[in-house]
Image (cartoon, rainbow, N blue to C red; front, side, top):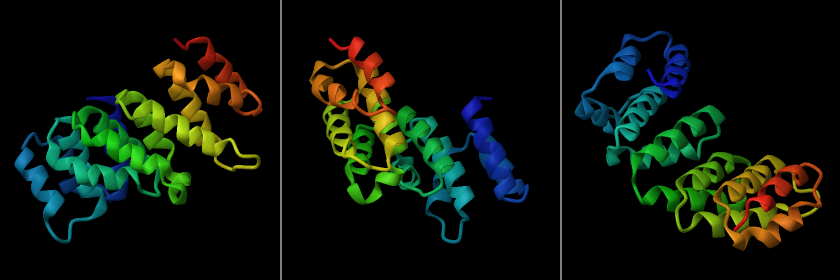
Length: 188
């Protein structure tokens, strides 16, 4: 069993109170059953998350909308699972959705996983969005340094020279300087 599925399963089994329905959703290979869970009224959040995760990892695009909602959730663990599944979904809309969430100034506190997803997807919008997001987060006293750090690390992995100026600006921030230095050393 995949480590990410095992972690999700442990969390959702606890959340569901050990429900047999939860165990079935985590084990079934029936995509139609999983897709029904996403649309049936009255399904608990844990069931929808299990179904969306399983469908997303299987490349079934019916999970896209649910996964984007989970990527934008207040619970960091749900965001992590959604980002993992979206990275495997293979839907070109994933990068656009992650970009919209990463650049939404009202949701910056929840932008960590969308930023990391953008770096993983290596989509055309990844570098411009990470540059713009990092530039905004370099303002003195900005409290979202973890999101800024994820931008720096993502830009370093992407290695695009367009990020040079913003990464040089990040050198002046104590919590970002080490990662910015590493990122700058790997630019084209």
